[in-house]
Length: 447
Image (cartoon, rainbow, N blue to C red; front, side, top):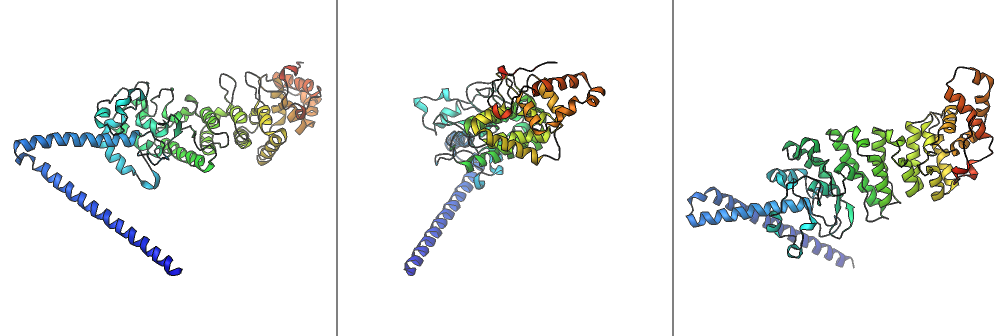
């Protein structure tokens, strides 16, 4: 038995050795042919006129085929996980940055070519129809149907008409942008193609907020996408091509939350979320035109983990009062993240997440008095916030109404808030009974 196993192992080793030898022989033969070709080109003028003409024709065809091959490497829209995929691939240095830079610098116009599905027809189904694609090289950078190679690296409409991320190609974006800027291929305001919009009006920075639409249950795959796209953002930041103001200008945090949750409710792109928030936490508290904050989005679509991350970020960067207000902030239709999360994950689990988070960040305690007063007078904050804070520290109401507090010099807003808190506090409502409460039935009473 052991002898048979040894024989099989020896056969496998011999087969691998034979294959390696064949590859080496083929490489050596190719090198000899290239050397002979270079020698012929160098001595072209010494050949007969007919031969010189043939050389010129063959050289043109040869150069066109090289350019077409490079174009296809940058442009391939097949599923990156398919065996048919021939595009950019950073996996195990299958394509190195040096190789791609060499190719692109020889043929820089390939970065300006656009994939245009409307140009395909039955005559041009062959993916190697070089002549067709070489004759369709629009250099227009206006927003039309189709994408530039740098856009395809981030997010692609695959040949099977499914949208998806390209974790194999995305690491090359900083390289392609750098080359485009050095060679002046785009106008300065386009940042080497990063800000060119696709047919959906999204630029490359916005498409770097995407999550994959395939393999929804493969957490390892989505974690890989999150990490690869994060590294590109980090590189672009170091290069000065991703700026702090871009986060709000292009609504990157909301886009990350929306596209993440719509593509895959079981995974949240935590690394990119934290990267953006650490750089600029302002979008956490900045509502869009519908009154939605990022925490509304994740509370409605995602699992409790996403809600926890968003709430934790709010408490970390706005610990005094705005952080706790986040989960009770109303949309234009009066929905709060707290209500949404309770409906999706249950009141008990949501309350546990909130309490655990507050305990972890207890070293920067909430200013209960101010948070309570602002919650009572701010129409955009649900009354659940008042009840929540009163339950945590019921003595604060007595403190706010004490003669000493009311007699000292405090702002009219805080005085009015103290009265409003009193009115709310005597309503007898409880957050435990109103996790999905009707805000229309629970009006603030003004003093």
